[in-house]
Amino acid sequence: MANPIAIVGSGSWATALAKILTDNGQPVYWWIRSEEVIRHMQTRHHNKHYLTSVYFNTALLQLSDNLQTVVAACDTVILAVPSAFLTSVLEALPEDALQNKKVISAIKGMIPDQNRLINEYLLTEFGLPLEQYFTITGPCHAEEVAAEKLSYLTFSGLQPAATAELAALFTNANLQTVVNTDVIGVQFAALLKNIYALGAGIGHGLDYGDNFLSVLITNSFREMQGFLEKYGQYAGTEHHLAPEHDYNASAYLGDLLVTCYSLHSRNRTFGNMIGKGYSVKAAQLEMNMVAEGYYASRCIYEINREVGAYMPVAQAVYSILWEQQNAAEAFMALEKGFI
Ligand SMILES: NC(=O)c1ccc[n+]([C@@H]2O[C@H](COP(=O)([O-])OP(=O)(O)OC[C@H]3O[C@@H](n4cnc5c(N)ncnc54)[C@H](O)[C@@H]3O)[C@@H](O)[C@H]2O)c1
Ligand SMILES: O=P(O)(O)OC[C@H](O)CO
Image: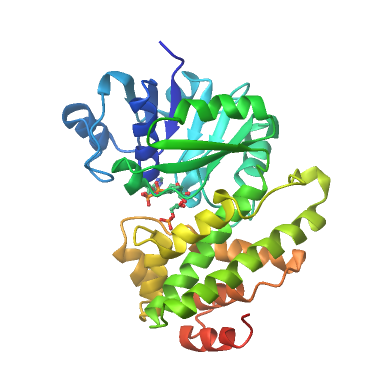
């Protein structure tokens, strides 16, 4: 039997990744926070809260709420909890728990309050070198993985051969994989698109039409590229931004489009509620899921004070969500500067 892979998290994305791997016959050690969810999965073979239509071959699953046991049993560990919960979840691990392991982050966000990418956090807390760190990004909603609709995932890592080996574990008739080395750039692209999808949702909630939204998204994409280029200059070579990358690829432009347009998107849905006049608290209470862009908007606002990229859309989203700026007024100000 193949070596098992650990999955940490039990939301929509963790459940979708567990489906892809087990569909491919891959054994999975799965850390699930709640004993009740584990019991339900063992007896009814599906996650009672997320992607409930997906039934698992439980012979391939080892379910546990003990994170240390799950991580110790596997050479490869996938992190799939929302960024805001990652530090509290990984607190259960000793400092050397990730030694010699490959860690794949499926998280599209930074550690809030620390403004650190997941790899930066793992290096500081667990000594994980960037060579052992990989990411899964790309336009891929868990709901469509559940429905077995053709999807594309990008796997990024410094070492192309090791990255391709990991990607191959996920490839199947419904899932194509792409590999690149831009392990820092894809993380920024993924968290920026969440902010812009919040913006698209706010615009929709404010009753702007498709014509305006396409202009908003076009300008957001320009902003994303401008930030990535400026960040590369700001951070220098030690931050490993790949010198060559195609921002028109699906991990960058594609994920921006799906998150801004898809009705599955948490970020767009959250933004839509804000545009319609909900408070942040009320919108959060309304959703059983996490809109990562909320936290990312503050991280990027703070990071960009140093980087200095031109980011009026991200700035407007930040001001609306964190400084209670009136959404209609913030959008009226944006209208003037778009091309
Ligand atoms: N859902 C998708 O389609 C999708 C696709 C690609 C990437 N992602 C990324 O995957 C990551 C996980 O998101 P998701 O969509 O699976 O989440 P989700 O919104 O579906 O679920 C929220 C998860 O958070 C957990 N949670 C709630 N409170 C918690 C706490 N106090 N401590 C620990 N965990 C807690 C819940 O148990 C649940 O597992 C995010 O970074 C997201 O951007 C999601
Ligand atoms: O539902 P969203 O907005 O969190 O987006 C999910 C994925 O990142 C889409 O690729």
